[in-house]
Amino acid sequence: MRNKLISLAIILLVPITNEVVGQNLPRKYLKVQKFLDEATSDKLTGVVVYISTPKGGEWIGVSGYSNLKDKIHMQKDDIFSMGSVGKMYNAVAVMKLVQEGRIKLDDKMSNYLPKEIIDNIPNAKDVTLKNLLGHTSGFIDYEHNSELNSLYLTGRLKLDTLSRYEVLKKYVFGKAFLFNPGAKYDYCSTNYLLLAMIVDKIVPEGHSDYLRKLIAEHGFTNTFYLQTPKQKNVSYYGDLDKDGIVEDLTNQTFETTNWLTGDDGVYAPIEEAAHFLQSLMKGKILNQQSLKEMMTWNNDKKPDYGLGLMADKSFPYRFLLGHSGRGIGTTTDLYYFPKQDITVAIFCNNGLRAAAPTLKKEYNKMRAKIVKKLFLF
Image 1: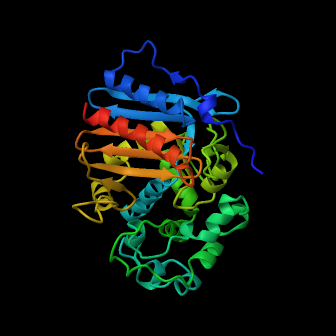
Image 2: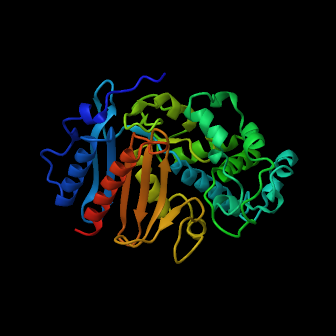
């Protein structure tokens, strides 16, 4: 039986704010801080928000707890598992190899992966690296397998005993394809697992060290891939039985973050994550041609995804790009708004995946308030 924590509605009676009192902050930022405090006074455990605007400069707001049991307040440099934001980092690594001339986007995945994989995944011989990056392969998503999810969510699956090949063999091999390669877009973590395995075949040091080196080269010294940071980690909380009472899922979140190869795996403090996205958008990590390829959207009129970048055209911000992550113990949104030159990141140590609707509603309500305040009022 899991040891459950006391309901947040009881324990978080007083909002916990940080670095707000005494600052001459823009009124919008003070309002955003209020939204954070409201969210953590009721449902959410802890939240960090990063905002950068041409007029307001950089600001980081925090509220709530990084560790609920020990009542440790959230800090602006706390490190989070970012979930599927890791896809963006891994896509950058692949695009860097394209830029270096070591691979091509139109290369078939069959050029790099062993016969036992290609022969057992329908349509694999026709899928290109671009299809994998843009989720247009038509492959089934191994993370959606009901057996896998049931084992994991009940604590009966030990990922450290499960190889990537075994995951493909059990949950992807022989499964009918959803559509022909390139025919449409369907978000699928299998694509990025395969990309990581391809990069492992291309670079002698393996994709993990290649990505770590790329991150370090640009000065992101507190960003980690498939390695638990030694300090400044938040604890993670979720609601797997959907009863509205959060459980400590720290160990499970570390386990998945350190195992989910290619499609997850990155830890960072919010400021470094935001700066990584900004550096990418400003052409400091990839050249303009590579960046243009990443921003080739699946649908120009209503874009969802490019090559490792999510996109959306909606009122009131008109356009955003970046990535989000949703796990059982972590929730992350990391976006750049090019028309306004604004960066917004929201990191929360509550997972929305497999959680009660009330938890999702609270996070989404807070996020909507932040967006409206920044872009409307």
